[in-house]
Image 1 (cartoon, helix red, strand yellow):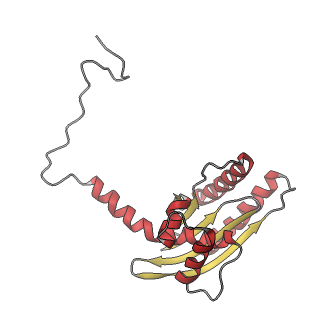
Image 2 (tube, helix red, strand yellow):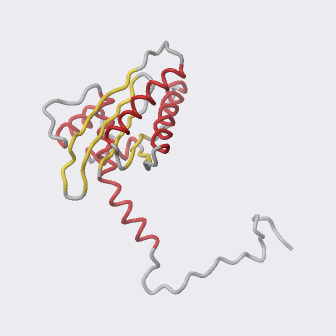
Image 3 (cartoon, one colour):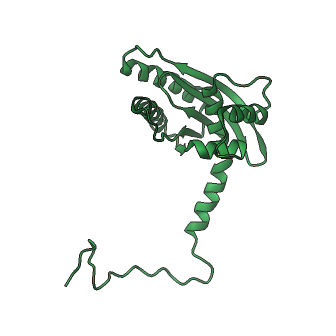
Length: 193
């Protein structure tokens, strides 16, 4: 499986491609950081991110794109820029029919380091070790993008097995019985008479 991981951002957007799978060690394919000047027009900054990500998608043809899920921060402007960059990446993947997976920062940290509260230095050190790199990826956005790709490589088989297990009826369970509407509540949850 090949995963393109994205640590979205407007000033720096990390993009990393990793190969791997069950029983295989993850392998670095390519990593880069898209940089845009803060004083450029927002539309052109998003265009720069889109063009570089699209080039990576077309060159490496990943099976999945893993994007960091935007979470609440105190700086609304930063959150908006991060969300906009993530949206541009998701759109580029969708146009190519590539599935998009979203992972929270704590999921990524836990998958890569075993600690959902790991700091950036710990994540970078583990990415360097897991990918058997001679030097740590710099800046941290590059390491974060690679961590996202590794996280997805490791989590997706488990998530697929869980989804398959949940879709099968439980042993000994009879046929599914449709839910009944209560005498006291109609379809909208309002009292009916």
